[in-house]
Image (tube, rainbow, N blue to C red; front, side, top):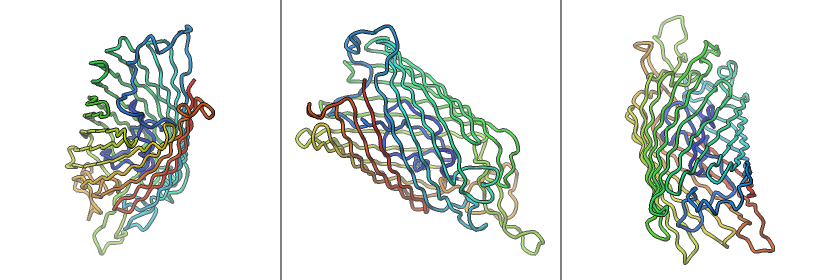
Length: 433
């Protein structure tokens, strides 16, 4: 089901708070869902530009006294609630020859801690837990119904070592566990800070190793399967003026192994005038390798006269299965006072079906390896997303109200043309030390 593999891997870049993970599988992640986003923090709001919020501040000013040990710099907590409704041909929770239910709810508590080891070394630690209904591929509910429960846990650390004002390197590593998936993630990160941090180049690579149960559409567990994902990412960030920031990134991903959702089904019509049922369900099948690519551009403009920051984003995705998807976003941060501001965001996505998506097949597949899927994430559709967020940063408030904490409250509505809707409410709290 659509939400079954929520919260699989965490990226080290800033989180876009309004990107509900249950609703972002359309964003180029065609096939098995692989999320790549950080949990929202209570300070997930841009300060007046320019600012890239990286580790290139004067190292002597980072701390007056190292103290010779670890210390916590900041903690953030958030809890999100998702409610998903809709129907998809891959779901068996409905008529055998039609779209089944994709109804689900997800509760997702998240925590982020920044732990400083020394002036040069910092660790960002992320933990998340998901409680999912209707998306569990349990050996029973995959066939009987789609409303059991599943829990998942993810822990990840990004370690950054600032060797100088011009260069830092680090690593991202973590693990994820849920029924039926187990996963580990690791990869290096290199960052170059040039021209007093006006220009930043980042290169990173990630290897994800998945192992999971071979749960079939008949409810049986037929053993153990695996897949491997390698991603290379390159990013350039440039301050164009005192109020303008531009960034460009390129991501290339290769996958090998079992790429299909083993419990997803495809409608199969059989020959008439036989004793067997005329309509049955067969499993989906993916090629054993897949290439995916994405090019993304961001532009942020701060308007001092109105205390407004406007951000635009465009993402072009293409893969070897003839999918060329386009995503555009507009986000506006409006400061009411320096410590209270409202964020509004709109996102539009369009994609065609991949080259082996089918609503059904007639007769048996030509070969056992013939690719086929009816997954609603892979058919042609358009998607829209509208969100609002209220941010309270007490660190910038007047003295009588000031404290080292901040709050966030947000709502997002996501809907797409092939009968899927997701609503998300999220609340966050953060504190600096």
